[in-house]
Length: 117
Image 1 (cartoon, one colour):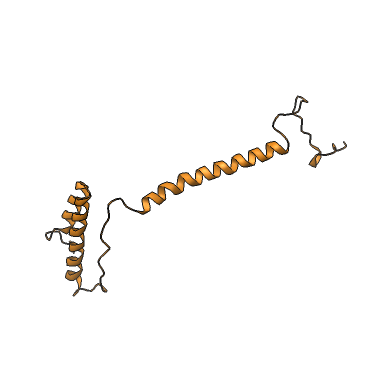
Image 2: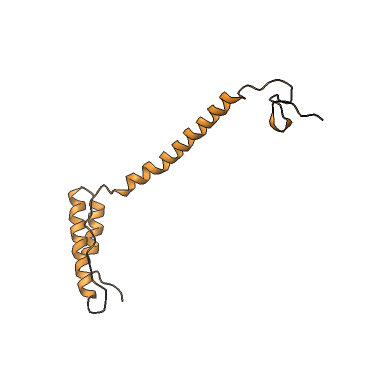
């Protein structure tokens, strides 16, 4: 069998029924490539846009308390600093209208909340 000239591997641009297929050729290749690039861009945007919105919270929170190395002697100081931080976070959440978060932060800031250790 002799290979058909002009096509790699001896193939033709005709279908099983012997007729030329619409959409084949250089223009169709460019269109399909452009479509693939467009779809890849849309998928990337669908992932990146929500993630960038999640990076910055709508309700600000204080920076974490800076603590030295934790030891048995500095544990109470760490609890006090974290409770003060939680109380500040509760005030910030309340100022921004998030009562649920403010209530949760106030619970964390309460002095009665201690570790079970």
